[in-house]
Image 1 (cartoon, rainbow, N blue to C red):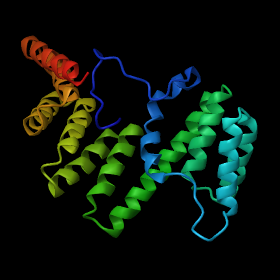
Image 2: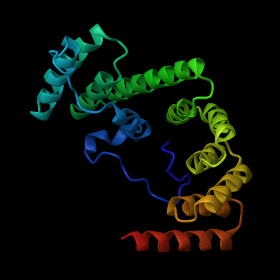
Image 3: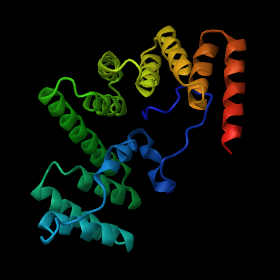
Length: 233
């Protein structure tokens, strides 16, 4: 669950990657966002690439050339060196998906989420006031289907920073998935008070209002969402 994704069945989700072979993996593709901060592969200034860096670069090159089996071999060698390399799992999962192995791809991407969850948890132990770590763990827990755990982490984020509008919206999503429609509505409304320019907030509240029987409110929210999106075009 990305924080900016609205719940509900009335809106179609946009796939994160366009390749059709990744279609069955929508539930875990949010791992890509968690890896974005890793940046390009670089050796430290004045030092040669490590074996792990060479294997990762080799795998990426093979994948770019369409040699996905060769890429998988490189990533697997890297994982023998470091079983907790999230990038290696992610790219191997992508290569497996390209070869028509959605189950293997899903297993690798689940490993990405497991590693990110462990990293965030360790950061929280080191610094119990690390708001970013709670946020990362909340996103990862939601991706893994642990919406109660995500809710608990988001409560902590908002206790540390009550003005975090994205956390407010994310907590609404977590509550919605746990069946707490009234609580979700409260969070979406609070998020909209803080930032009334976000169409996804209106869509989420419209969905929840409709589920609670408020068709007029849902219609008004959807109308406003359309207006805001048209203004951005």
